[in-house]
Structures are given as C-alpha cells and as structure tokens.
Length: 193
Image (cartoon, rainbow, N blue to C red; front, side, top):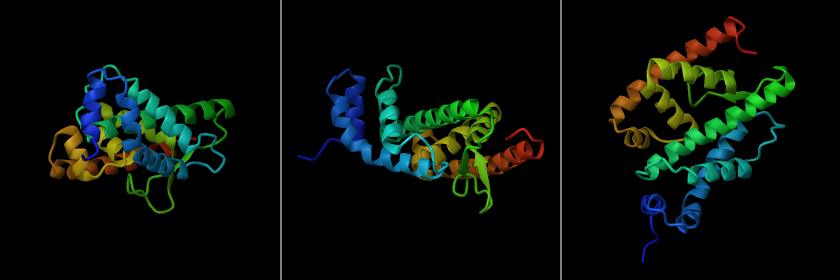
C-alpha cells in the first residue's frame, strides 16, 4: 500500500483527525528543513535562530491553523512560506530593537529578486517592500513570497494561487523589477539602516 500523500493527510487535519499532524510531519519535515537551512544560510553568522527551531515553530503554527481550508501540498507550502517569513521578520525586528538599529540583518536576493551579485538586502527592508508591493499588487507580492520564502517553482506557485505559469512568470519579472527599485530607493534615502 503506497504511503498517503500530503494532500490526503491535510484533508484529515482539516476534518479534525487528531492523529493526522503526527502522520504529516514525516512527509513535510525534510522540505521544511531544506527551506529553513536556505533562509538561515543567508542570515548573519551569529544568528540565534537555528533551522530546527524555525521548522518546529513554523510547523506548530501551521498545524494550529484552524481557519485554513487546506487544499493540497502546494497550498500547505505556500502558507508555510508566509509563516516562516513572519517568524524571520519578527526575529529580525526584535534583534534590531535590541540593538537599536545598530546591526543589519542581511539576506541575499540573488535568486529571489535578481539583485546584483554583491547586493544584500536587510530582511526588514525586504518585508517592508513586500508589504508596499502588496498594496499595489497583491498577487505579485504573493508570488515573491511563494518563490522566495516558500521555495516554490513557477508551476507550484501557479497551482497555489490558481493562475497560469505564464502569468506567474510575467508577475515575477515585474515584481523583481519593482522590488529592486523600492529597496534601492530606501537605501538612497537612508530609510534602510
């Protein structure tokens, strides 16, 4: 008998099966851990949040979601991207508050926003830019979040938000260009530490 897939177990979670979360974790843990490793490799070397802690905190928040109508695996990882983004940004904001803005949390945007090879962007600045983009174009903001924080492919992103891969590609290109300008503007005006 083949092992159950993520979508099937998510439906069991949604139906209130109290044992379903225990069956889900082995199916999603490795991918969540891979995402956490990727994000934290981009952080400062002395970052206090470890990949295992990020995965566990994200997983607990994901399973505790009572208002989410889990659709499928792509939907789960899209929500996981949002949760991990929130955890990392909250951590960065707390760190900055403790240091009173004296330490910059850097995150490479080489893959995500196609920034230049030597450019690093403050994680808080990226979050602020994504929030501003969301006000202009919610779908583009969501695509960046899914691709960068969720690690989803073009096709998985298209499935998660219910549009064609061609639409995702076009919006992805537009969003990257807009974020480059927005983040660059923040640095020019001294808005970003």
